[in-house]
Length: 435
Ligand SMILES: Nc1nc2c(ncn2[C@@H]2O[C@H](COP(=O)(O)OP(=O)(O)OP(=O)(O)O)[C@@H](O)[C@H]2O)c(=O)[nH]1
Image (cartoon, rainbow, N blue to C red; front, side, top):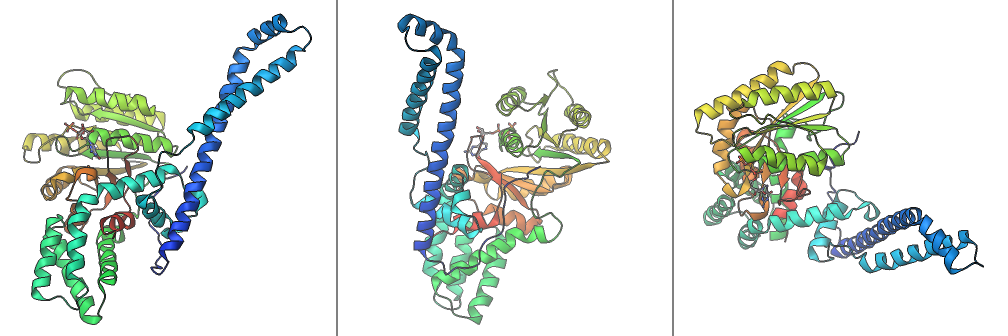
């Protein structure tokens, strides 16, 4: 069974020239283009063959009418070739790849090359994702990078420079704890050796990656996986409108792409439209939904039904959607704690539970308070950051990991099915501080 495509490894060689990356990107672009043509040709051939098969009776009849000299089998074959040719012409005309070869393509290629990938293994989806991530973090990046470049590269940080960097980092919602750590670590390095601005930014990247990876060195697995031979239960919680239901749909899509069987328990019984929303995602991704359409249904009961169904059908992954709740509404938080208890009680053997808080990245520091309160009720094991595409507060990822030691597991950069991927600190930091 394949797992999420999330390779954290990357090359440490910072001396590779830009020309190398451009040439690598060109090869990857050519490869994607060729793959697209091959795919379309295959589709066209299948269509052509199907059309011929389904219309063979007509072809035979018209052949008999039009020409008595030409054997029917030959006319059939000519017709097939004509259809194939026709399809090929159309294919060639429409085979341009939708992803543009531009600066962002080269940046995306660089990220993949640094992870030891080969241009002939790259897919359009991967490039599209990295471009979205780069674009999504542009607001946060704009605030950070230009100002940092002005302050760095002048030896050890003066008092003013420290203040300036602190302000820049806090504005990006990196949070007080992480900001303190970053400034202290950076200053220690600059006292040891004088770094030009570019090198100082490279060093800063390693500090940020260390923060983001720190939970993985302690209590958590290095990546979130659908574990084999157990029932994986992923409980998604969060405040209203954080993006839970959309994320459930995107996760079901990812599961399907990776060949994992999946069920969704639609336990958001509070918002009437939520179950319908989940059902639409279920249809899109071919994922069975367990729901209860009755009024005032106990969400814990839906979770119980979901668990029973998942165990009976022996599925790999049970995704649990829950209602949005404000962290200060005690009764709703108690309801969440009850859902968690049901999961813990009923799913003792052969299960792996992930409790994931969905946080809207546009809300910045508010995410910290949410993490604190949801931690208690849901026993969080990780965070999913959504809406990074519209946020200038992407630094919240660092604030959360530094303050709570929780790993960021997935990030969302748009409303579409493909706009969610496992979190990679390398990709995130490179996109955050790309010059
Ligand atoms: N731009 C953008 N929009 C997103 C993203 N994720 C979710 N959304 C949008 O955010 C809105 C709220 O998403 P939902 O999935 O309904 O949120 P929810 O947390 O289930 O909401 P409640 O059930 O009310 O708590 C929808 O319009 C989604 O399309 C994202 O990564 N980027």
